[in-house]
Image (cartoon, rainbow, N blue to C red; front, side, top):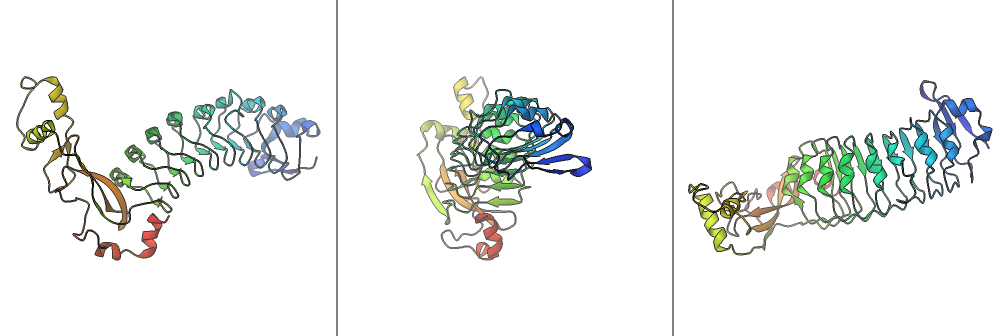
Length: 352
């Protein structure tokens, strides 16, 4: 069995057994010293169907690449690699049943399972609390588990090229998330909670089913890259979409709140007090109105990152209320502001 050995950075021993068409990985020909001192092991581009338990003999291993094989499972022995920080296992045949039960005990910082057959993100992965980078692109994932919020050290989450239809609000509980890649899925809406991702710099949403973005996305002031191409985004101002006439209860509540009529717990029953607390202020700065259950949904373009214009959903108290998002009275015609945006800058957001 041929191999390539390199001292690597700072004297680290690197063992390269990639591109050798190996069906099995026989460690008997490797000296005990090399197994003990190896920090990096490359087994990519072979024909391995499973990772042999003998991999646990590389006790100081920090980096393991087993990509581009025919792997259908990963052996229990990997859980004894207590120093392993990076595991690259892309382009295999792994699924959610391929991992050992104690896989979550590893101290991994980077995990790449892209190009496999996962239909769910294994719960063992949700126990890897030191993860900085998690890649599961090009699988068959249909959802993101709520337990993703456990990975509080995560900086990069790559889930592009799956079958995901929704983003759970728990994603917003990742304080250090900088790169979020959700392109090439079936996502129809973005939860407004994502605005809590204060570290987010890049958000890839191209090739989904988005027709609008939540107005709250304007709070992502540090966002430098937003990719939206390939979505059925609204390209013209849309006026009235839906509106249910307010009930008598809502009309009374609107009057009390908008006219600041004083009341106390002694004046009203508890259910009406709770109802009045649910009042939402109309976002139009020229309107002092409020609404409860009945409102007008509208999609308008809003300036973002200078003169980028994004279609955002917002809610008004009535059809007569002037849009707070229109910077120009021209509704269906292209505004002067929009025409003045250089084409390349506009494409950077809308087309990625």
